[in-house]
Image (cartoon, rainbow, N blue to C red; front, top):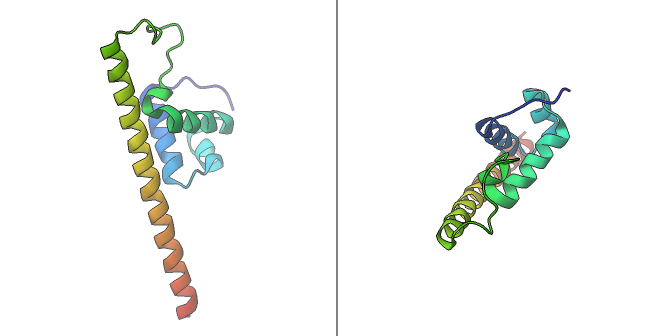
Amino acid sequence: MKSKNTTLEERIEIVKYCLNNGLNYKETAKHFNIKYSQIYAWVKKYREHGESGLYDGRGKGKPTEILSTEEQLKLKVKELQSKNKFLEMENEALKKKKQIERQLMNQKYDT
């Protein structure tokens, strides 16, 4: 697969697709025609830093030590909100998985 330039929105969409499909990196890579390793890296960054972790800031922006205290706090709040959103999505996915497993077990014992 050839390297592909993606926007922040595309990376977020790809990561959410992967998470909603039970972290199936192989299927996600095939679906979006992107390298497995790239998707794995994005999911890891998303888990650690939220959506802001998917931002490609090479050659742009100020280092965090130059940011004012207020700017640093705003950035931290945004990161924590993103991480919380991710954890909520992950929790929902796990609940759905458990529900499906229960349904399959019930079907197995009903037949």
